Image (cartoon, rainbow, N blue to C red; front, side, top):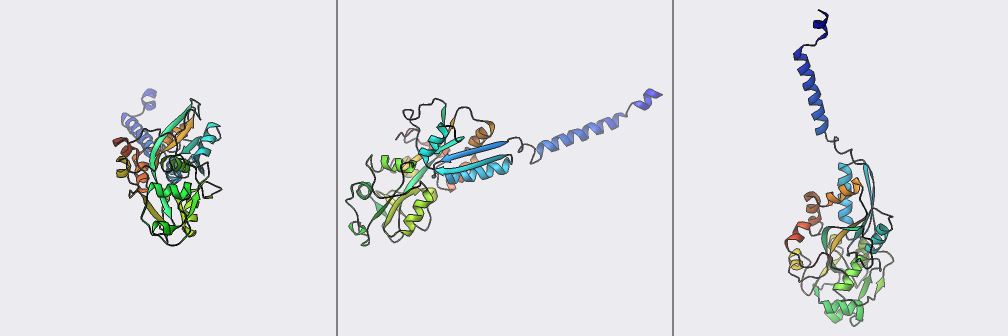
Length: 296
């Protein structure tokens, strides 16, 4: 009799088990079930050309993983490489490839997340649609062109805006447009793409260059040799002013850093990249015009 009263009815046992199973599945499917697993603080610094995409991705990543805080800083590609190789940041963003001759640490790992076309911009009063590569060389390097009237524009002094040596965009410009020549012009103290755009917008006669992701109606975009910065012209080898966007790490990444780098390559972020003017990794993989390194 005592044994019978101590034993629970089979129906109640099954009901209890089903209830526990339901609660377990509910916890696993809840929006917060997996998003609280990652914890940590990530610092990414460097390229201002890549910064808009990294900031957008960081915002969405932090929404998905509230336990992770991501601090995105600029400073330029050279600064980003310096900071990551000296272990001052977790990720060094760069428009340029880290040549092993300059950055020999074998633990430095390259993560290519997209490519970015760069574009020449001028003050909105300069209505020219295209400049030849030689025109740009004569404006920024030789000094043979110093008035827009020489190019069919207004009688206005040409004011070249030059980025600092820390700029990966400047390094790309010097390599592929100036063909290694030195730059001359009004030198900026900080490497900031939005600062270049804003100075060109408010300085009569100014000309500079920025990533396509920084274009706005405040400035006028100029083609190079009649070619616009598109995926088609880049794939055809007709437009040379572009670069891969690298996110460098040093040594073994921790779990949040690995997850964030993987997140940068998700269809969600790659689609956002294209909307911002970047070229997605999938598009790059279809046609490889240049080796991934594009060493400077």
